[in-house]
Length: 351
Ligand SMILES: [Zn+2]
Image (tube, rainbow, N blue to C red; front, side, top):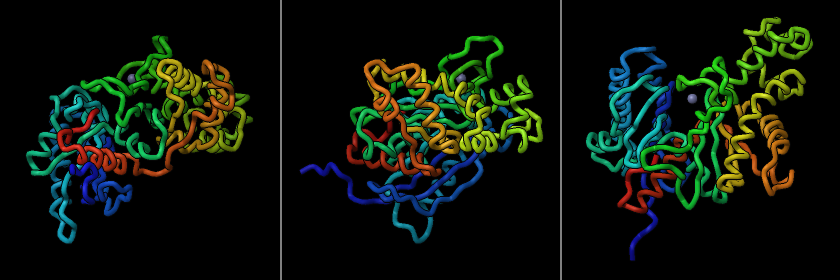
């Protein structure tokens, strides 16, 4: 009989983000991450703007070095495979196409899975970070569901039929770069464009908007809960103070937030009406800092826009928050790798 479920084994898991590289261990088939080490990523965040190819080389050298150190660490059970969550779009066979938060501008296509497998002599599973985060919820959520990260930008992935819905060449799951404000002076996006959803409804975009609202209506700003922490200076408003004021029910902060979330509600309504996804999980620093306030205001806007065929209760019931921790990608890439290791022909993960 063919064994479809892999025997328990240790995976070395890594989460390569723009500021931090995390490396830890996880027993395949479980969600318990242990011995996690965190080091600053040797890329754009640490060295600033340099030649993207030089930064890509540094990032890849560091990733290989840190994983190799974990694989060889004394006292650990032998690692049977390596699984890496990578902050960038990639093809279905583990080739990273871009690394805007890792090395900035254009550099060579990077076959991460092949390079690591060659260096480490172990099976390697690599996936995009939002894909990895979605896999964390694959066993607990009914399909289909959509994971949306809302932090300094916005990303999404739809999970359906045991897989992420994504093109082989990495297209899909990028609603953060959907144009929602065509004005020439619209808020700048981290991709270099303007007026994209991720520039408007992200933590960065909402902060940009509330500062502008404070400068435009100094009377309302002076009466709001934001005036004290910012010393009455619009540009001194922080995301922390903004989130705290919105959670506490401050009208000025909540209305600014509501306006920022309006295009995100449109995106959810579009996804629902286009392909019938009825479950949306939100993670990312901004959404989780706002907590229930985020769900309430987004739900208000979604009800106002409408989701064809759904009543208010069913519309609000689509929205939920994910776990409030930093482990989405590590746990999720471990789950994805366990699924792949049960199917030996597909060791390289979809983007
Ligand atoms: Zn963009």
